Length: 298
Image (cartoon, rainbow, N blue to C red; front, side):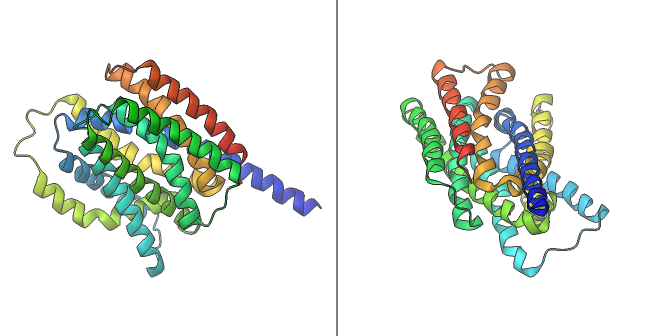
């Protein structure tokens, strides 16, 4: 009985830590789209994508060498490649391209679809089986976001919205695959090895897409590049993958429903973009959905 009680306490503590780590990750990621929006006004989207990955990968390589981490096994290379394609290349590139057509406030609303995408890939790739009620809340939250996008943005910029939807699918797969791998490889090690795996290609593309001069690049654009390189591409994933592994991919993934709230706040305060009552209403509704989804995630 005592052993069972200790195991239950450890499980609860692990789950609580997972939600805390996940929330920290979401807060960090919330600044990604506003920062990307600032950066793509002055940087080429492709250059921004490969440059941020190169900077983060160099730092990741230094961390791996400093802590003398073992190299991943051969069977872990394919999952790492999927992580790299999803979150190192796919999501940053697709969102950078999308933000040429839509505002960061509009793109942030699409992030509300990430929990559903992550949950689906958690079942397909992570072997998780949430209860039926979980899917009701998850689908409801995502439907609210998608419905708002359909009513507000698709007629204005179908290119931007399609790119954002593709970015969400790539990110959901990368999240689920990375969280599954972090159970054996470690949270920060997963994103570091994924970045290092993509480093040769990213360096080559950075050199190829580098602008002739940086003289016209403003300080806010440089700060934005630094943020998406250090926080969005590396530090945020340290907390995020650890949280997903500890608390469950589908469950902790629902915290992404809170990301629009933080992101819209940043878009309004830092970029002075207009945030409509409809956007705020959708955000409040999906926050309520995450509460219901959490209850039935396991």
